[in-house]
Length: 125
Image 1 (cartoon, rainbow, N blue to C red):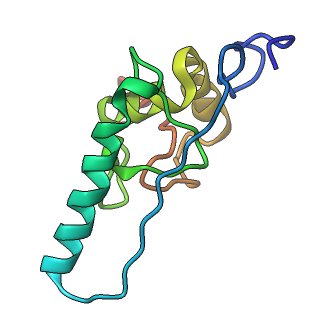
Image 2: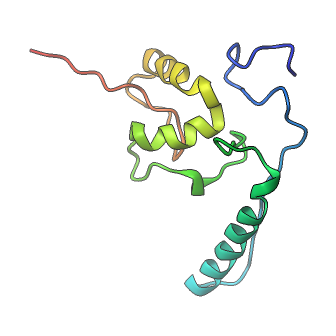
């Protein structure tokens, strides 16, 4: 993996990565109490794993969706929120990907809770 530079593709997780960990939890109980209990268990496990994972920043793998590291809601992408999760998914490639998104999809048609945002376009009249 380290033969290709981290900056040559959007995927930065190359040299020095031995494992990928995905936390997954599901439950069949209904109600807010059950939801909060299971989310609490998941977040405790995430915290327990802290000494064993990457640091500065704690990285995330793009296809292992984790809304706890940040999410845009209401179908609206805010750059400063996106930078939080974007730097974990894409490390130093996030800024470059924002520029690509701005060129390819300036109206942000293709979006989800953790998508890369385009830069805002301002026109002075």
